[in-house]
Length: 298
Image (cartoon, rainbow, N blue to C red; front, side, top):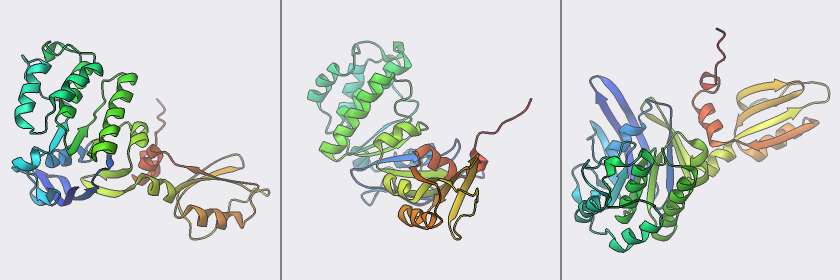
């Protein structure tokens, strides 16, 4: 289990992390989302032992990560900008990884040749960005990590390879109980693979829940009344409201069944509850209209 507890990190007076607290359950796929500058990459660098926090705790299974070689041998990371030795090939990098990670599997390395159509003798710097990302996954997954931390992991991969990579990751989660923390701006893709979600903004973790709980507790209601009335029951936590003609759309926080029962009592001619996408949840949790697309007249 990955945990950050009230982590503070300041750079030249700028508070990049402001008592950030999050928990990644063991064997889960946790999606970390937030706007640019929210602190996602900063907290990832704490989880991988690159940064040392000013205060707070960053642990794996209760053990601190910073300067802890035993923990780092159980953890792998694929950052947005993956590092490799420019003159080295995938095969040479595999030798380096094998010396660092005790569970590195040569058998898996050979099997991965069927998945990634790359020449493992070619210098990595001569490969395209997408091919380099494939090489990163090839090497990292051969390390057989217990914890995998990913920052924009499939950026640069074509759609077929993206599906292949996610399939491999989900296989390790199911078969080996690998814990995955992934940060990405591709919310549609995260929605397909994550079972837990954390939303960051301004150095804080605003909320973290299972994806199913998030979708059950924030609902899009479409409502229309015969007489054109727009009155909704008092006490509903309405986050956003818009309408087209007689059909009103409300984004409401709360229990889905309770909301439907209360609105149904008003006898609308149309009442429909639509699950929100992760992208919609992200927008409304970060302030709704303040994050909506703005129309600018030039």
